[in-house]
Length: 308
Image 1: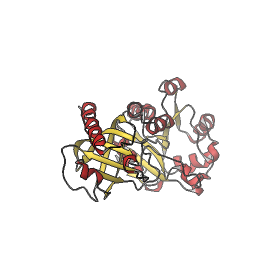
Image 2: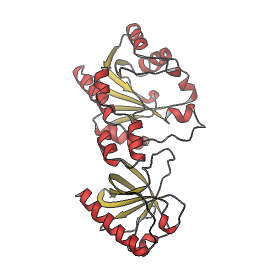
Image 3: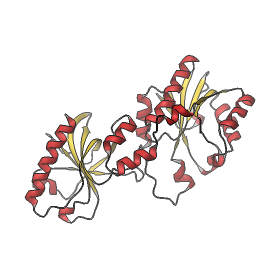
Image 4: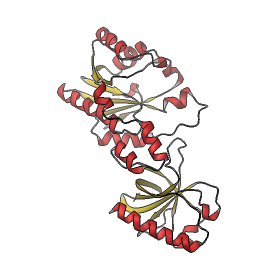
């Protein structure tokens, strides 16, 4: 997949079939539209092109809102789209000036003049342009004027999927990993740099890698213990992940700790990716350390079941 960071980088191609959106998570609902995009491009002997936006429009339009949590960073989104066979991806910088383009200015100045779009694939409720004033009816009018086709994904095809990024976020925040993964069509993941912690796990016989998340908008699943897969230099390891503030040790700082099974290498300053597989239990405080150790062993045994 070829990635272009802005429409000015995009070459003039013939037969461009395009869809656009934020595609946060590239979940099952998104894949319905992307599948149709690929089919349409093949039938028309054209090129399947996806346009997405970075940073997320909400961070630009509402900078004072700090509650936005995303399912995928832009790098993760690129990987997911590439895995689906998308040929071309435009990552369009989203700015205040860009947001002020009317739907007509956007279609004419960007989609036609810059991208040479021949066909657009959209959902039945697609909105675009300044204050989202462009809709399917307006798109039909513009298609007649600028000579491009519009293909609408029927309402029943979208609604029958019953998938939304909000539903997935809520599932992750409540620890319902199995539902989130089902709606995403893949295991939810996050990655970050391994930093030095207080090494309590090591003293208990269960060394952990502490993950530092540099992206404040990336969603972290709710507090609890999870079975997961960790990836080190492309090698997969069964793991147990603990998210929370370590109540047994009265630690108020939230952390992401990963215990990789059958692994004893130094991971400091390396990037570690983890894929969540299932929820094991909520966080709880243990009055006696031995009880914590017994529980960790039970967590590992259950994780092995989940990951088998």
